[in-house]
Length: 272
Image (cartoon, rainbow, N blue to C red; front, top):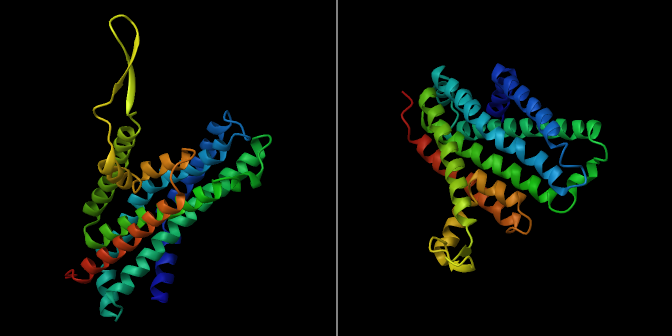
């Protein structure tokens, strides 16, 4: 498997698509710092903003990158040749997963280092140590695991769907579904249990919100929402939200579940 990982990484670094993705992330870092300057370096949200913008843009980039990277293996017949050469399907799957995780980690690291460097150069009063104050370290860990979890989902789909076009459409649809669905669920969860309206006489009246989610239903929706990119972003930027450790555990479950399920289906696929 080691040779497969090395070969995949070499192919990834040499590809034009990787450098295109890298250029996009570096440009995102520049735009983010310029846009965040009005927040002020002493505001805790400044460093949080630097962290989350890249984590929102990168998954969309990875939908394309993973689909093209793995799809090329199928279209060139490389996957079948690896099986003929004696590599197990789990080794092939694992090598592709490791390569994709390495790429998403490197792209995010490049974005973050660039954003922090530009902030130090252009934003008066910004200090590198400020990134690790309070919840920032936990936020960084959550973002990394979040990126890994969705990359694992993309890899699973692309390993199962040998057609590059179909795989690209599937992973983009999956990401947009999670993004939009998570956003709608977060808005629903943000609704108050009681709201204030006004009577005919103009006096304020407190009324119960009939559409408010409560009890077990709310817990279920909250848990599912916490597994989506927008749901985790809301948790990152909301002070006093639930433990980031729990959210990391959710990401680990997604990584493990997607890998096991994707590996089982790929093992049974006909590569002819």
